[in-house]
Length: 400
Image (tube, rainbow, N blue to C red; front, side, top):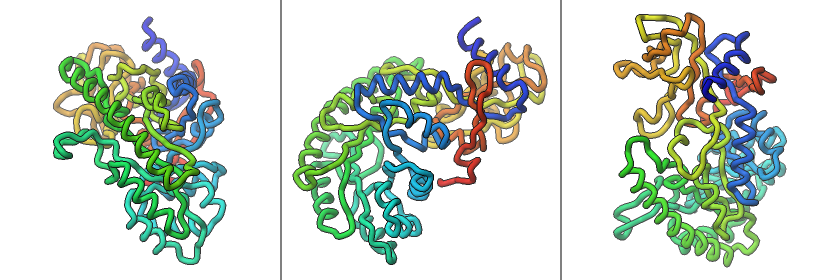
């Protein structure tokens, strides 16, 4: 029996009393992935990206482990919710225009002390000030650096379109503007190198593309390490008591951690290890989050149909954004239908061994987005469900 077949047998036994659709997290794999992230971080603390987990129980589980400290959140409303639940070190990774939440933040000393907001434009400070109302708490600010690799005077760029702040002088100018402004304090710098951390460098069947990606990433790492260090020096000249410099992502943990200028690493997807992390040479993990759909039809030889399953991930639309049939091994989509809203035909010889009501296990393309489809996660240890816990959605929270 292969390792994957053994996992299928465990998951089927653990959930035999549960009807699909359902989602589970294999805690043995989850914990092993957490340990691997800590190893790769080389002693630097890991700030957990909540968007990649979206379950408070699992966020609390990983934060209880040595090597993890703090949350990287994705909306301001989520940040306030987490702070009210007792978490006290939350970095909002994206700028916000949520005036209601800013008013709450500025009016509550505990929230203001727990939450740091992202800024890359002075006009964002204007929005916050306009939303304060009577609130006069000091707002903690993190500045985001654009990590893109640029060529030909900026006419060619590789990297996500995020912050407009690219040079040390640009970041330092915004730091000075924040420092001069009453009611704000710069406490950190963040730089997410998505073109390194979020792009696989071993694309199956594409050796030339894979080599080109590895070359690009090596070049980008060198350029960013030099520029990030210069940015930190420039900002520290304005803000000597800077608390942290955050960088990285699951796919670049060990490379980013090697930079002296970086004080902490961001990661989250590496806990679940969705399918987008199958194409990396820098690390390998154990798939920990899966969902099951029930077989409801057997249209013919080598074909079964499962209920639902059309759960595409965000990003540029394409096959790499689709979940993949994972267990039993050897199933594939019908290219004419793909994963459907209500039904999904699956092709392959394993279909002939599946009965009505059997479970087919899938892996989502990305990590936390799976939790927007399910209100609970069944936590599996060995071949038993040891707990069933709510996702954000299960707690009535849909932040984005």
